[in-house]
Image 1 (tube, rainbow, N blue to C red):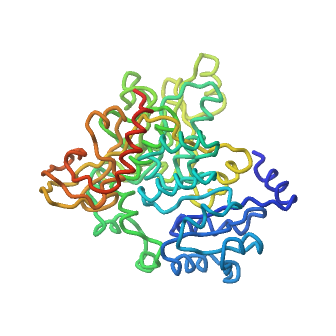
Image 2: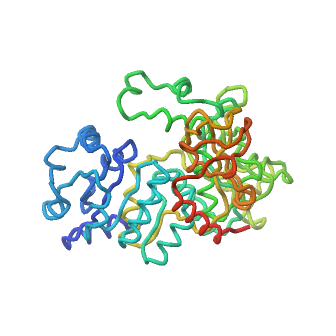
Image 3: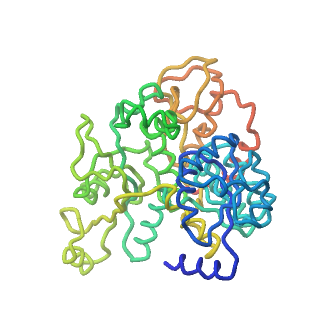
Length: 446
């Protein structure tokens, strides 16, 4: 709770926290919108393949052009300005940069960027949950050995869920479930980039503004993003994914403790210690009362009768028995909050969530029947959605992680809702990622 104080002390010593940002899309823009208002935080460099698009993002979040006019990173360090480059290697080579934020959303690039940053002795804030769920445990182990911090991004839901889980353990309650809210119905599963805007209330002007990527938004709609994020939370907390994937039970605030407890206790979970989603819509499409579409939650059990009585005395929302309670955070502000992770890494050398173990995976699952020779198009596309399953199950199946399901050719036909395996596709490129995944298998926890 003292990050701002620590930052003030650094700034007073003339030693700002210097960062590099990779990716100036929606998330990166939100980071930049706040960064220039945080005294003592200096964005030295921004790397994006499209430099002009990055400059347009800076202008859109009200940066003055002279603020990002530095010609080199060294000049940016000296002047306090920012350098925009198309080469991520520039950021890794700059000795003054302490923390790199990876916000590309591209899983393979994200893994490679994280490895390069770790090798350069820099802390990594991994906005790119797609990369984290694919190789996060291995990256975290590499960072540990290198003596740097590898962290989830605060402001994104996985880090906020990890914070709630930590609160449960720190208070001595029994952790039962953790998850987030989401606008989801079973029929959304087969949404495509062509149909995705039907599920949102955005205006045509908003959609055409340059901030709205149909594949990204489709990954939220079809449940892929949920699978990615919940598998990442499982890897960070030691919790489990349901054996047949996320169930998305509809639940409002008043129902969390009743729904997210084991079936043996009258709830919907196969066991205690599960991650899942509180859907904000009923299966027929009606909105759930008091839904937590933008929030995160935990459910937990009182360890004794006295604590159970306290739950009641202090107004905690509980199940009918009073033994199970829930706590939640109603909103998350995405990149507007990510500076918390940056400062935690630089000033306290602590992550805001880290994939410490390999317990879960998000695997490619067919949206329809497709023939040999068809090309898969990855997260948020027309061909596959991601299913969150236990890591041991993914390894036994030889399942294809969703992060490696883009632009790969099928060797044999697949059917709707079938988990795609590595044997089903032609594995040609990305052998370094497959090698890292093999390394990660050594971190498998049953």
